Length: 395
Image (cartoon, rainbow, N blue to C red; front, side, top):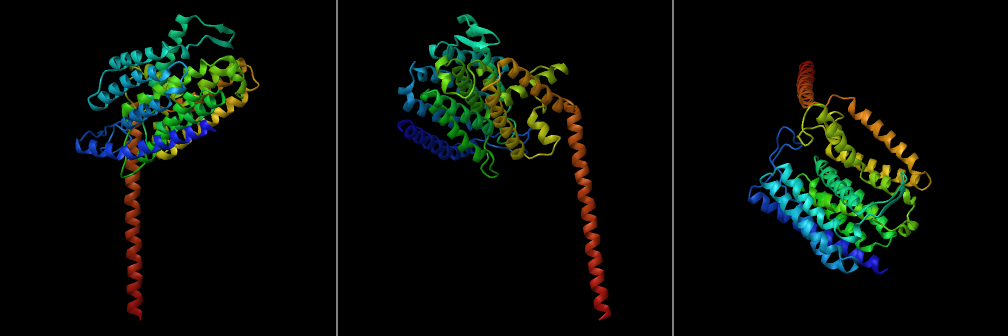
């Protein structure tokens, strides 16, 4: 009961703090003219305020102050330096743009604070693919690579209105449930805090008159928290899994299913870019959400909702399978789904030149249709006018 009261208080406080301060951020950004200018790759057509992630940063800092007593290994004091590093780097990147190398180096420093805390040490994969004990140096390599992948994968899906928020909300709901069932209340409250901020932000991100983007400031912070929750999930004690509805050895696959949207999109985009002899981080409109909008004609809200529902259903499917199936069968299932999705999205030609031509062609077709409808409308109106005039003459 005490946890429930704390959780409700944290959720309401985080939601209100984010919701009430984002309008202030919008006013300052507009006054200082720090808006995001659209370019040929942008999904928006007008200058839009960014830096919404600032609200995430201080909301998390406030929340960590109030929930710090629930962290067994003083995790809050290790999270704050990493959050601060990524906040500064994201803010700078939103304002003046920094190189991918500098951004990657800052992420390594932020991750180092987390990996040195004993609470996050992964001692074993508990039989996943017959892997049990893990040496400490191997944990540092695997954990570091995993956190870097999650942070950058989440950063890359922030390309249309609502998507990053919706996917983040789905992930936070799942991790809140997992950490509540395993009695890791500090991490459950951390998930609730970020979930409340994302929900408050989503309304502004989808708004037509008070729109704001989270920017790299927000996506780096959210990706960092997601990576922390993921590595903590994999570091849970074996006895904690007795309350979870899936087998202990399937935990790595459950973690992949939770992060399927950013991981699949990043792998797919990198494969396309490398196949086209481009750098993996080179900008384009080859992301899954861009495909849904540019090729399938969906709106931002529709694409975000569909991807979010897919993420949730995919996790639920793997939790059900993970309660009975051994990890080899789950691996086969995961590979099959990824191959099927890869085929669906790879069968199109996603080179940027071709995409641009198709978009321009569609606009020309829509323009021609509009003119034809306008001409037909004028003809119809003229016919009605002539009929009325003839009627008057007859009378």
